[in-house]
Image 1: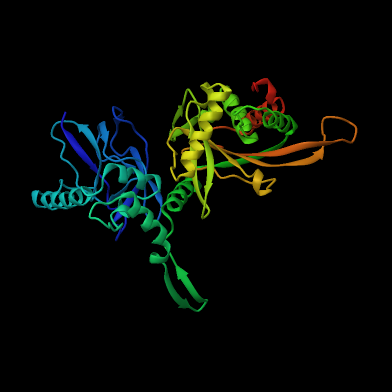
Image 2: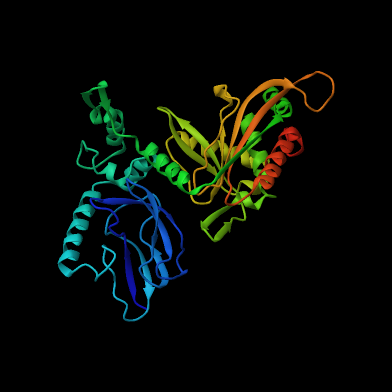
Length: 398
């Protein structure tokens, strides 16, 4: 079967580029004509894009979160004999030889520019949240781009990109939104368009975790996991029994459920930036393995490495150190839930008739109502509360 390219169509006048937000089909999948196969984001909206052909998806030519030019090829498909490749405008033949030559010339110039960027510099730039487009604007002190050039660029990026002006509202400054925040904002916009959110909360007795943490601090062991790490392990263990929270909607009529847990953990960076640390296979680990892995992944995130991927179905956000007791967390697709942990506080023990103070922490869960309903979400949240209140049953502290 012949291969043809799938091009990003010209959807709005004046649009020059779009970001690949998500893929709805995998290589080897059969695709019908006019069936949505990927999602793209422009400066106006996030939308599903339909296939111009019927056939089998051969490969994706770009990764999710890549910014591509309008008309650029995003995938290859196997089609029936005699099918003519459709051009970037969504109809008509593929680009002419002259147009292909022009594109080739552009690619050659890009490859020449990229040749001066060593692989380790490119990896360092990715850790710092710079896109390929950003990287092209970083000046080099030696002709070959080095990590030190990126550090210099980032340290001066805000002042260099800031513009001053004056309007009826007074004087102002304008600066480019940081790359990480642009990416997060894009994901949240997508979430507001796709997710049907539901939110509920419970108050969990926190004393068992505080006692366990005190026991750890009093020991002479080098193993010193935090209270939040204990909480995260409890969540990972509960997720074994709740497949809906290990699932995501691939299309409106296709639910994908992962066998194991990729647990997301929100990590704040200086400048109010936010990235995600991820513990893959979190439900398969022993307590010491989980604690070590979580610490390693958070350290990577603090260095600027966002670890979000399509298998992260639930994320944790910890606001205990900020004195926040309650919140309404936001679900960022492809995740289907976000769980908030609030500060520990003294409350009246609800389990006995007499007046007695007890340590509590509020847990707030926002979930995608398209995948699970209120009863299922409540059972999941109450199971987490149960694990938190009996934390010693799943932890072994030497």
